[in-house]
Image (cartoon, rainbow, N blue to C red; front, side, top):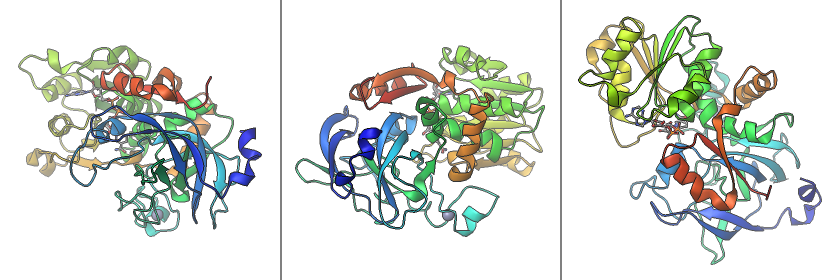
Length: 389
Ligand code: NAD
Ligand code: ZN
């Protein structure tokens, strides 16, 4: 950190540093030297301290066609960094601040940001395809041949330095260890937020969570904090069940061992008629249909968290007529600048279990090993350290 504070001479110049670049769909990332250009108005250049990967990075590293497939690209959207320099009109961040970038914007000024009903930002959230928030396809990254490299979800954390718009940046207390704070940058906040904000689970409720990756386990943690009576975890990988116990799950179902029964039938038996809340945290349309059927007629609510832009989901229309609800949730319904500091505070008060999400730690250079671990279902979150430990 001292190194950054003393390096003001480099503030307005490009910084040469290392990045892991996704050059082609499905191929291993390549560590290359890149140039990171100075932040423009409303932007901040940050030095990444550590980053982790979420299933969304894995999915986007494989899309080979359509508007979401873009190469070369710097993936990564869960990170903690420290502000190296700021562009014009940035008065809420200064050099040396510890910050959390977040893929979901929060401008704090639009009608939706001012409403307490959700976390949509109508000024910015509609645009998922630009490189930089206020500058369209302009990129702050170039490779050594002078070619632009695409950004990813307005964060791009698989690099030693990145440039992020202030609408995507949250200042956090330096008291929280960075390897715990990084978890709050996407997946874990999404799961906890979905239980807390999107579903607003009441004490004594019954809950089913489909998919026990970091997102699903975090839904369990959120349900535990809301004092749910029964939290059922469903996963095809039984190794996830021991982890689930650490986050308050009470029952587990392995779909591959249900024989002729549908998962929804098994859940209805366990929860005596259906759960009050179900959460899809895999990204498979048929799993969302089962999650919906598993909820209680009249009042059940299903929250879709898994992302699969390609497949439309089928929902039981009689269930809808009979009062069941379904909704999707980006970033767990959290307003980043308001709600992340609350989660940090709850961690510092020892109420929130973040520690159990960290299953592996590696140096940034070994990022492809982290992809492999996530793909094989062996890791929840692997902390990637930028500087040698
Ligand atoms: P992960 O890969 O760590 O976890 C997915 C889990 O689902 C694994 O444990 C896997 O074994 C399990 N699974 C696979 N097929 C299954 C099936 N048929 N039935 C039950 N379980 C099954 O992924 P993650 O990082 O926890 O992310 C989960 C999903 O959430 C991804 O689709 C990701 O893109 C999405 N996501 C959404 C948001 C959002 O804002 N909505 C934010 C972050 C991640
Ligand atoms: Zn807004």
